[in-house]
Amino acid sequence: MAILVTGGAGYIGSHTVIELDKAGFDVVIVDNFSNSSPEVLNRLKTITGKDFPLYEGDILDRDFLVSVFEKENIDSVIHFAGFKAVGESVEKPLEYYHNNITGTLVLLDVMRQFNVKDIVFSSSATVYGMNNVVPFKEEMPTSATNPYGYTKVMLEQILNDVAFSDSDWSVTNLRYFNPIGAHESGLIGEAPNGIPNNLSPYITQVAVGKLEKLHIFGNDYDTPDGTCIRDFIHVNDLAAGHSAALNYLFNNENLGFDAINLGSEKGYSVLEILSNFEKAVGKEIPYVIDGRRAGDIAVCYADASKAKKLLNWEAKYTIEDMCRDSWNWQKKNPNGFKD
Ligand code: NAD
Ligand code: WQD
Image (cartoon, rainbow, N blue to C red; front, top):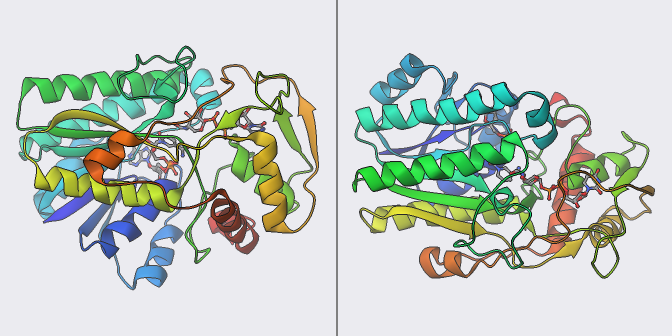
């Protein structure tokens, strides 16, 4: 009995593989390395002592996926594989819809063929859109402002419909807030291609000298210091959330579709994050204030009570832990997995 982890070489997937291994699950990884490096597998081996079965291939390739299901005794699936860059999705909508939506449709179809009907899906707080009021709760209406966000809104609908059509399906749809941090070994972490879009890798790349200064997108929001507020969550906490989600799937049958927030429930402003990183790094990090970035909302944080109730999960890591671990990863691997 094994858990198929699509996108298992990626940022959240690789941390989840370690957590699943610790919890005693057998893991099989599928990844096409479109946004990750095969070096991740060596690092996972150093951390866990294990060679996880890795199938290099594309989830869009049905025959490839069928061959994986034929070789491995897959019991359930954690589905991370997808593209995730908001800005890029505006430039390349067809690539995003195809990879994220068609890829998931192919995966679900192959799962059905092999009668594997338990799935944990990576959704995002982005589905709360622009019009909800914090803290975000699962029953709020969903919407999006960019193709990436629409892929998540649409996939949630598709998964909901699949679960409704056949009561054998159990879908745990996890909505992550803002994942940061890295494994405490500093061997794996977030390694964005090119200039990072997200705040945490941008800050650490300024701190390590790869970028000149942070550009803060707006300080005129209706928040105490004028900068946006986000719910940052340590990637290890997210990883533990997946293990909890699997236990929930295994201990219950015919769950249908459940959307569950994975967030810390705490909001920190961009300036507060910056100051926490300065403490972790031990020096000032230069920044300038720029204009607002299109599509940003002022405040975003979770109500995570459903995760506590259903999964017996809550975030444990502090913002200090998150900044320490992100920095530890960055300073040991200034060029990501190319080092
Ligand atoms: P990531 O890019 O690091 O990992 C995704 C992995 O999937 C990569 O290793 C990539 O090579 C692989 N992949 C992509 N398309 C594939 C395909 N067609 N076939 C096989 N492999 C493929 O991203 P991540 O940050 O680990 O995110 C994982 C999931 O969580 C994504 O679905 C993302 O949308 C979602 N998510 C991420 C965040 C975040 O801020 N990191 C927040 C909310 C939700
Ligand atoms: C956080 C805050 C920026 C970079 C995104 C996706 C979301 C989810 C998580 C996948 C914002 C500010 C950022 C910079 C800045 N991903 N910022 N300077 O936008 O909350 O969420 O990642 O599902 O879908 O939209 O995260 O890290 O990009 O931004 O001032 O160089 O930092 O304006 O207020 P965001 P982020």
